Amino acid sequence: AQRGEGDCLALGGLPCATCSRSAALARMAEAGGAAPALDRPCRAMVALLIALFANAVAMASPFPFAPFLVLHYGLTDDRAEIGYYGGFILSAFMLGRAMSSYHLGLLSDKHGRVLVIEIGLLSCIIFQLLFGLAPTFGAALAARLLMGLFNGIIGVAKAMLPELVTAAQQPRAMSAISGMWGLGNVAGPALGGLLYGVPLFAGVDAPALLPTSLGAGLALAAR
Image 1 (tube, one colour):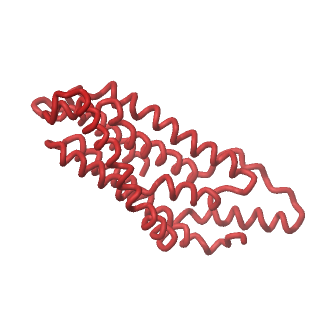
Image 2 (cartoon, one colour):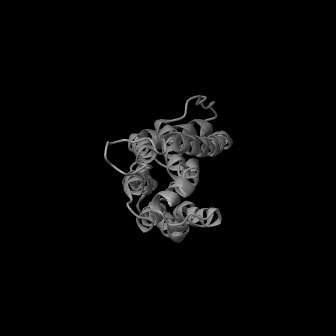
Image 3 (cartoon, one colour):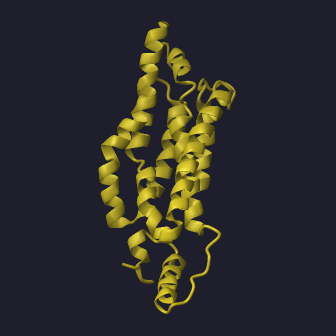
């Protein structure tokens, strides 16, 4: 069924132009007219892609420096145990996502996709900064877990896609989503590896603060 111009609220406050355009295309198709080519993605689609990129950077930036963070916390000097503890840092985010994905999906169906995306971006801002400032291993784990717990961006993005583009554009739009997620998973570790250990503030013993602050800035810009 086609969405009408009054259905914007169901999408969490998306611009009415999106619904109006879909309704206009449907009316033109019914009248036998040719629908205009939509060469440029709508603003909502662009914003969604930026949010996905920021989310992927937030998730992946600790990949290269997690073992060094274990050494920084003084948990162990054993190389095998460094990998063991580093795995907890990396997996905590995905554990949080696994715990909350179903509930965030229900929330997006009830109150709109945009709300869940805003919550996810806010979690990337707050908990990335807390992760960068974490004084202990337990605090770092808690920050990563909570960032994943409140983050449902990738699932909602895939559900939101058919609501933003026409059926003919969906394959290209899905490719853009996958590509942007992959780009973020490349940029995140690259930035984390380059910036880890670079002091952001003199006297602050937080070697991960600079890459996590940059990731938080990307999430802030995506909002």
